[in-house]
Structures are given as C-alpha cells and as structure tokens.
Length: 397
Length: 148
Image (tube, rainbow over the protein chains, first blue to last red):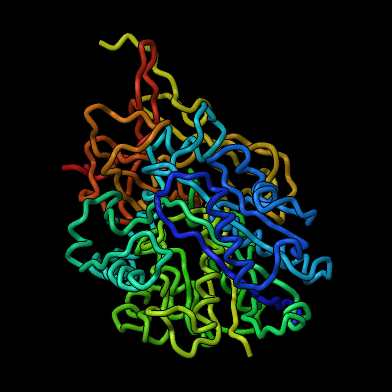
C-alpha cells in the first residue's frame, strides 16, 4: 500500500487536428480535472508538465507554461520529457512528491499540437543524431519500425493480415462511444485491408495518426482524499524502467541494436519487463487485470502488448483476439477507449489519457464503452530512446 | 561516365571499396562486445568499464531479421527520388556480432522477394547526388539473386 496515491480528478481536451496552441488544450484538461477533483487550483502544491519538443519554446518547459496559464500560484514545478512516456514520467514525479510527504495534492498536465503527416525530425544537419540519420540514410519512418515488428508476428507467429485488421475494427467500434476520440467511425476488416499500404504489412488505417489533445490528472495522498470525503480510484504502480542490456529488438530510432556477443539477452524484452515491474510494484499479476489501455501505434503492436501484459503466451496474441477476450464484454478488454487508433497520438498527453480512461472505467463513468465490474486496470506505453511506462490503477475499495 | 566524386553519405561508418564494401564498427577490448557504428569512448555493457576499443570491419553478410517498404516518400532529411520509387528496408542480424543493422534493400528488391532468415550481403549504392558528389550508402543485397 505504501506506493498508493489517490486519483482525485481527471480531464481531457478532445483529440483532433485543431491547430491551436497546445497550452489551450492543457488548460482545458487541467480545469476539467480540478473541477472533477473538487480541488481549487490555488490549493495545488505541485505541478508537473509533460513536454513536447516539436513546438519549441515554451514547449520544452511545459510545467511552468501550464502553471503560468492557470495563473502563477507559487506551486513547486517540474517538467518531464520522455518521448511517448513523458506523461507517465510527469505523473511519477508528482507521485514521488506525494509519497515523500513533500506535497499533499498535485496536478499533472500533458498537451500537444502536431504537424501533418509523418513525424519528422527538426530541421538542420545532425549527422550524430540517430533520429535524423534514420531518415537521411534509410528513409526509415516511424511506421517502418512498427512494420518490422508486424512482419515478424506474421512470419514467426502466424498472425494474419486479417487479424491485425480486426484490431482496428475492434478499436473503431470502441471509439464510437468516446467523445474525446478524434476518429469516430466503424470499419469492416475489408475496409481496413482496402486502405493503402504504407509500410508493408501495415496499411493506412492500421497506423496511428498524430493528433492535438490534452490530458490532466489530479493526484493526492490518501489522507488528503479522506479530508475531502472521497473514496477515490488509486494508482498502485508506475513503471518507467529502462531496457536491460543488451537490447536486441530494433526500436525507434535505432540504426543498430546492442550486441549480444558478450552478454546474454535478458529473460524479458523491454515491453514485458516494463509491465512486469508495474505488476511487481502493485503486488498483482496478469490474472488480476480487468482491462488494459495499450499503445497501439500499429494494429499489430496491440497484439505484442497482449503478450507483454502476460495475458497470453508469447506468439498467441491473435488467439486472444480471435476468441473475443479483448473486446468489451470479453475476459480482459483492451483499448476500450478506442486506443490510439481512434485518438491519434498527442505525445505528451497520451500516457496520461490512458490513466484518465482507466479512472473513468474504474469509477463506472465510461458510458457506452463501460467495462463491467473492473477492479484493476493497467496501461502500457513505449516511445523513442528507451522510454516507456506502465501504470496500474485500482478501483475504490 | 560519371565524373562526380563518390563520397559517403555518413563518413566513417563504412568503406567505399565498391568490390568489397564493409561496415565499420568497434569491439571492446575487455568484454569483446561489438558496436555499430564506431563507438570508442565508453563500453555500454553495464558490467564493463572499458575505454579501450579496436575499430573493426563487421561481417558483410547477415540474415534478415525483418523487412518492410516505404510506399510513400519519407520526409526530409531523406532525399526522395522524383518521380518517387518505392524501396524496401531490412533489419539484418549479423551472426558473429549478434546485433541487428538497418539498411535499405538493394534497388529493385521488393518485399515479395525476401523473407525473414534470408541471407543478404552488403553492397554500395548512390543515396542522392548534388552537382559535385554522389553520396553513397550501404544496402543489403539478397545472396541468392533476390529480385530474380
């Protein structure tokens, strides 16, 4: 119980391609979260911002940017950049303040405005930056990396192109019931398979878009929650571990992997190791999980996460899908929110949005996409440069 | 026929010997782990504090770990051909070094020509050109003909 903190409030700005300043999305999400918590902004003692690096200054110092926009209140502040895991690191930073007794209540905000098309590196010649070189030397976009892993599933695990298209169908249906989702459209498998090939075997409707959006969470100590008379959903674990050497899975934006010539590869790759660290911290196992929000940067990647979450053995992800286990109403629904398929990625907000969704689900406030009788939810997320996160959220006792 | 200078698109990462191109890497002199590209400052094996490295030529053959293609032109700083030509990419596992290196598949090789585990070898090709130079990069060529 020692690592448990209370989730008092959550809020989001709807995902879309709005084209406004990211601060506006963050403020909307923050005000919704504070209202949901019943906590006035002036009472917040710590604010953590998840950074975006594409908007330039002041995107690099998001904590202070959001604090200024909400009105300077003298709170302690932190800003976190960890690629797609920025939001979870900001959340973990705020949690540490609360667990250390340095703050009773904290606000965490992430928001982003994204350009059109493929995510591309910043301008300028940077011949020592792998994220620049992968484009210059190979034309290796983000979907190319997702496709390497999708191809391995197909050739090594027997996943079919119909299976991965079915992931999009499932998530599209879930997203119909989510007002914060950007894409609210149901697809058939045939429609997904008819969309243009982008990075073989991944098609346009199977690759996550980039979106504008914002998400915010108010967390507090259990004592603070009790004073407010709340019986809150709680965060039981936040894993933000690094990979273990040697990392031999080619991940964004690697040009080459570590070598396994001198040291044996670890028992667990990065994804399962990251989730396992969250399970261990929460003192639970995969059988305790009622639902999951995972990073479906591609449809095939969602199946990778089923295995990383230990919901099934390695290589069996598509069986879970085919059996209906990961649909709403199934054994362990995955991406009841509609996932990245329906949101598109707003990088610094996305890991927080996953926690917002679990909070609504565990409170029974998820409307037409409600998962019944959920007790534990888990998130999983991975991004560039060895960053990732997994958060365990628990229903109120 | 071609009077332009042949230069590496990323200097120091591979040799420009057209007959016998090689990727240049490093080997730690203490734990013997390998690196690509050249890495000579500090060993990244957490059990090893070595700062002694030898520059080596990496295996020029390997097996396809996975592959894909770029159906649409990648953004800058990639210099896409005009008109655009779809190309394939491979991540290739080197047996001795036990690491995976990215590269394009040789011109004309498509995703239908290869599968995981196929043997490929290093070749050089022009990535892009300007008025003075052809900028070369390594690519992976299927050993058994590939695009037959």
